[in-house]
Image (cartoon, rainbow, N blue to C red):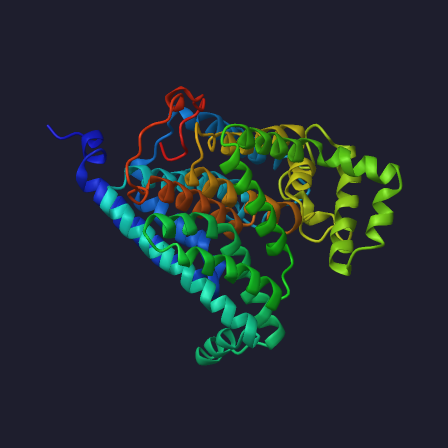
Length: 419
């Protein structure tokens, strides 16, 4: 008798997951250029189509538990939040619950997919990100002429300055996804495309006036190099750093203000960074009023004009809205992500996952709101693509005799993220 479990574990469902991932990979590049907001729809569709394969393995449990606590606490905090959504379906609490399930389903699909289907999907993803890089380079040189032409062709013209701003969002997308895409390029025999993707981030950031991607690229490259050089220790240090960021950011800013260093620094930075620092300062003041339970989900929207929509810092927003419980859950989640990159020897798969995680965390620290749907979907896409690239078989190398002591290297306490 055929059971649902046997069907899900069978070759038919594995092939299905491979084709669904191919569908998602085919749209990732174009959406990164014309409309990153649609990532939320794309990941939702992928998650729905592969929902029967959702699974939480033992190594996933800390991150899954952290997400569960975060979603439940966020929903409960709506009881005291000053922000009232227009309808239940538009509440971020409902959206977060759905996103947690569906995006995890999309992540699980990578482990369910057959090897051939996954290889096809990652090949398409690699070419999609390469195409995005090439388009961003062209847009950076021409001032987003291609995007303006597209909008003109569909009868929705746009001002040149707004076109540049919209296209610049694609640079953030590429900066998060280039690590997994570059690993796919290397393992599929197209390492030159990895260089093109990095060049796309640099050219796009410079030509489209987006400084944050350059910061993310530098930070992610340094972190990736550290993980390759110290494959066991570096992920632990990065995990500790991520935890420190989520737990200690309000205290650090408060101390800098108390010493007068914060204001002195704010006077020296550009207007955009000065505005961010204003938001952060206001956020610290309001966090100190309700540090335990926070002000409630989406409360940041109600603190204008001191804060516009959100504090532009993930740690401060989580503290402000969800208090110490939310900050602790976020800490566990991110520490687990970096812990999963531990290896017993240098591994490009761990480098790829680290690059994506550090890029995403860098932007979260200075740019986007934590609960933005497209932003959470981009994070899920980064996890899916990193897992997929890690599962690709490395290019064949000539066999060499094992060196003495290689088999005795200390193993990671967690398996690679793709297992």
